[in-house]
Image 1 (cartoon, rainbow, N blue to C red):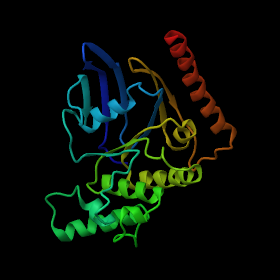
Image 2: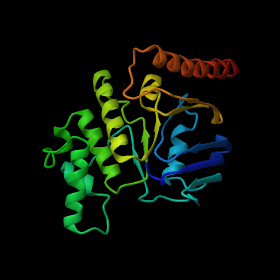
Image 3: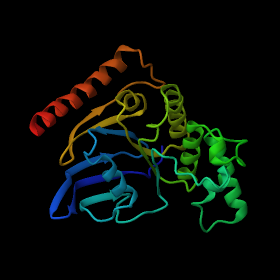
Amino acid sequence: MTTNGALHIRNVSKRYRVQDSEVHVLDNFSLSIKPGEFVSIVGLSGCGKTTLLRHIVGLEPEYDGDIIFNGSRLDGPGLDRGIVFQDHRLFPWLTVEKNVALGLVGRSEKEKGKLVASHLELVGLKGFEKSYPHQLSGGMSQRAAIARALVNQPEILLLDEPLGALDALTRMYMHREIERIWQEEKITMIMVTHDVEEAVYLSDKIVVMSAKPGRLQKVIPVPLARPRDRASLDFVEVKEAVLEEFMLHTEHHFAYSI
């Protein structure tokens, strides 16, 4: 397994100024992620999950605390980190291969061609190089987005609810595809999701966040062999443990809000 991709989040806080008030999004959030781990983050909407990903990828460089990646503090974007959003964000006027090649800079045309071809094959889109986004299914579009995020060979891939818009059967297929890609690429993956079963199926550990402001509530390990059986007792027990922790905070949150 690669020695790169280690991430340490130390006492990270984030506040936004909205008109005359201050919104406290993240509060003293700390978490360490080992190289090559698959980590899922679950929590109520608005608990700061996406904000945390944006800090890691470098889209929001200003924050209190430290995010240390390979020994250096992150304060901006870099090719060593890629991100996939819920919306695939492919450009409709470009073919699949040209969408995937967009992020490649400073490479020869020959090298670009090899990288694009290998990553389209990795995500199962060989033969669709000349297709346009409107000619792809939802799952295929997300696989193209994953290829685009991986083509620069990052050490961390961030997934912000990448399967949220897909139907249930396509999601289950994509779970297997994401797991396969993660195992082949041997990189660190961090995924935000509202689907607890998805988190249990894919993750080495699950981070449960509390909301307003977002804090680390609990880290739940997933010590299950792969491939995982969703119907097994062990799988169900981990799922119930996550749901119990999640619902415990949800009840407290809404009781406080009311």
